[in-house]
Length: 278
Length: 169
Image (cartoon, rainbow over all chains, first blue to last red; front, side, top):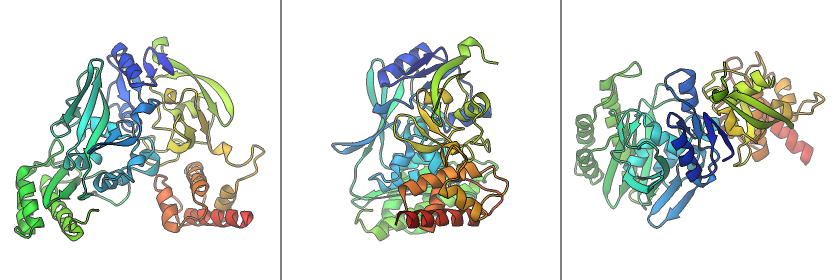
């Protein structure tokens, strides 16, 4: 432990982090701080101290383990802009600014769990799984279903997200988002695709209270890829599947329309790629 | 106010000077630099990572890089080294080539963004001696200026890069 105060802990290993958290049940786990610090400034979050993961080196880095890319939860977003998964790389490159990307982590993006978070559609389309570590061991759960409501997840008390496992694939992957301007913008809506062996898997951000995908949408997306459905068919399938929020940024109707446009755009790109791999 | 349970004490080296800091657990590195240590190079702009006025170069154990000091919980930097704009140029006040270029090109107006821009531009030129205009714009994407319209700032970085290349030729 580099530093231990009643309301602040700076562990160097995951075990030290779990112990520090157990001793400080009201503390917030903070990694890069890019979300938590503004939240505290604006009083949108309450915390009784910090357990910082910023100096836990074992949580940083990307490695290959069999069929999976294993991404440490503390890996900064900047390190993912060149990730082998083109969807994840595109989502990472469009997050914040260079100065934010060096500190923001993939783990923070997942656990903060807001519907517009950049990396979430790419992880959902890619079929990611999460490694959750507690004092009793590690459990691996699908990312699909992990987010239960905006800002809420299946992470149990005393548990840490330690790694994200993203299946490697030889197919096409991409991510797109739209916002109200072209610089430093939060996604009004976003979408990601993984297309391999002629099968499309789409996922959407800000299309509902949690990251969203649908078997119906994927069936129509796959048919469009194969020339058996039209763009209008896919837009209709997306419109039927999503439940987007209505807020001062955009209406639900706008979001429903834009999500259909993004879905068609991604499947068109996958078609052009022709299964050559991105 | 900071009660004893809310405070955290740690060491921090800023611009080569070692300090012992006692701060509230949630205080940002920017607040500690400016309000506790009197280091006023980094500026408070947006305080949430958009504007880059608070940019410093810090090594938190994973290699020195430029970051927004407003987003870093200060105690996270325990035992670490931080370089502000005061570490760019000489202690006697002699300006660096990047700072000279900002002056020569008229890239400074109100000045609140300047320390952040100089910090980010200096980092860019350490990594890329001949950046294209697009590379300069990408590297400065996290720094906002509301006076210059950016044209003079990009020109200053181009001038600094050219000056540095000519000096080392």
